[in-house]
Every structure is written in structure tokens, then in C-alpha cells.
Amino acid sequence: MLGLKLATDPRWVNIVESNIDEILTDHAWCEQKAATNALSLIVNNPNYTEMVTALIEIAKEELQHFEQVHELIKARGKSLGLERKDNYVNELYKFMQKGGSRKQSLVDRLLFSAMIEARSCERFRVLSENIKDAELAKFYRDLMISEATHYTTFIGFARKYGDDIDVDKRWKEWLEFEASIITNYGKSETIHG
Image 1 (tube, rainbow, N blue to C red):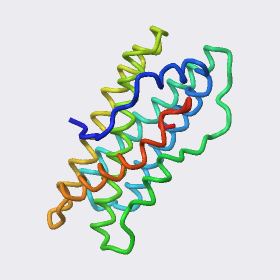
Image 2 (tube, rainbow, N blue to C red):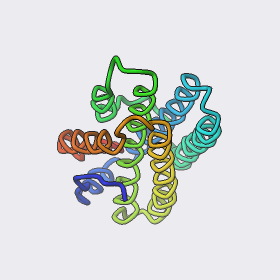
Image 3 (cartoon, helix red, strand yellow):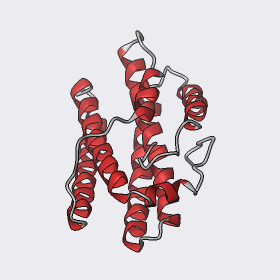
């Protein structure tokens, strides 16, 4: 369904398990950024009423996920920690087309968002199937389902509003680009790292 070209090596979970505190802090900040991304799309595209309505729900869900991860961190006797830089997302951001029409910019931002959700969903699946901590396995299984819904929402709106753009062709370009950079990741205890 997600169309990702390369799967995460399940051994990545061994790296994650060596520093659960780090993955939880990174994950919390990923959720905060996802909420901010949804709000940014709303601010820049207020005239797409159906999309705004859906993105309000996504922003609320992402903020709820941020809170849930924060609660897990607190339950482990830790604090949130400083925001983490996400090199994977920063590399994806550079692939967005610059200088096109507002509609092209919207479609590419939606595809960028769909790509992040797709990879997050895939990583959450790997975690849910391989992590030894039963509480975290269930948590990541539940989040995997949510991320899949967000992915389909973003890509669905790209197709809906990109009526004069070859969205499927552009999505294939996103998938190829993501495949070219993901080989550099999966080596650290971060969601995308």
C-alpha cells in the first residue's frame, strides 16, 4: 500500500532498544512537527475547506500522540529533552519543487507529508513487530494504523487538488528519491534515523 522501495531492516530495533529514552524523545518531537506541518498547510491553504477540516483532525491526533509519548517518557522517570533535528525530513524537504504555481506547491507539500507519514508508518510496524517491550509494541501498532490513515489523507488531497498535475508521476519521483536517501538511515535510535 505505501509503495516504499526499501524496507527498514528489523535489526534497527536492536539499536532502538539500546536507547529507548532517545527514541521516545525523538518520536515526541516528530509528533509535534507533524502537528505543526498540518497547521502550516491550513494557514497557507485556508480556501480548501474539506482539506482544512481533515487537517484540523490530523493536527489534533498528532498533538495527542505527542502527549502520549510524553506520558510514556514521564512514566519512565525521564523528561522530554531538547528538540531533535530530523536529517531525513530535511533531505526530503530539499526535494520539494520550488518556483511553481500555488497548486503545484500545495501538491508537493502534500506528497512530502505523505512520504513522511508512509515511512513513519513503516517504522512503527517494524517496531511493533520486533520490540521486546510489550507496552511499546502495542503502542507502535496503534500508531502505525493512525499514520497509515494520515498518509492516505495527504496523498488523497494531492490527487484531488492536483487535477491538472500528474500526481502519480510526481509520487513515483518522491518514492525514487526517498529510496535514494533512506539507505543512509536506519542506523540510529531515532524514528527516521
